[in-house]
Figure (cartoon, rainbow, N blue to C red):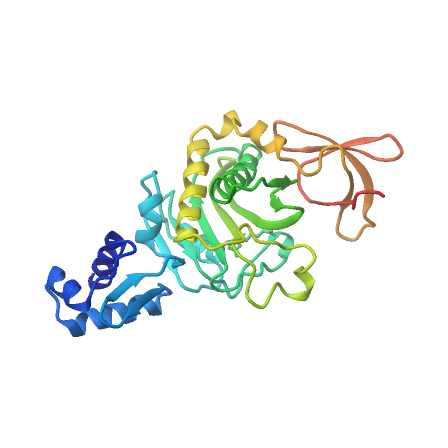
Length: 324
Ligand code: BTN
């Protein structure tokens, strides 16, 4: 495609400008076709700088999402990887594709979601340009109980990928939120379909949403105190690199999911161990507890003030503010 060939030339040129004439000659195109190609790339979110008499170059802060961009950084070979400028929800769309028989490893990535979904029926704020929203289709052939590691594995993959690219240390709030300096920067929603006859998971759609930067207008009021962004500066092709890093790290571990090799990495990042928490249950008062330990099945052992203990396997907790 002309657009991709122009992009590839601009990438090769790095910080140097390429004139429209040079691009046209290298690709055997007319000057008009080059202008059109540049316009299309800009419409897709690529920052292409132009200087009179010098030509064009990719802006250093370019952060457009594209299949080609993600594949440039991705180690694993994956089947279809579809990138959308905007979509309702990557999880919703991928579930429909899974029902139609899409292969394991199908990935949908979006730069914006207009109906992003979170856990427990909530919505997930997914504005354009400052987040990475992606879903990966898995067909793990595991009993549902063993598939719970998928979410924990994804939390570790996201935490490590963010740390690698940002140089900042993250934490994981049980069960699957990635935090930076106490603020949520990444949420994970895994939706599975069970085959009742075999008792095995038919497919699981793993959805990961990362706030890469603070939106220009800030987070909406209700998120202002709790949400944060993984990066405080713009890196070239940040979201493509981040998508590839998360996917690669997840897929490295997914091959041995049942062994749970990522357990220590998960536990070490825990934002809750040893802390006073509240166990939240629909229709019930929040119950204060102490977070004691995380099991190898990623359950959270808690102790209530009356001395009784419980292993939480799913649900939600809040971490109480530090005393004093
Ligand atoms: C949560 O924190 O409650 C989970 C948020 C999960 C958000 C991701 S973004 C990609 C995928 N598509 C969705 O609609 N949701 C998940």
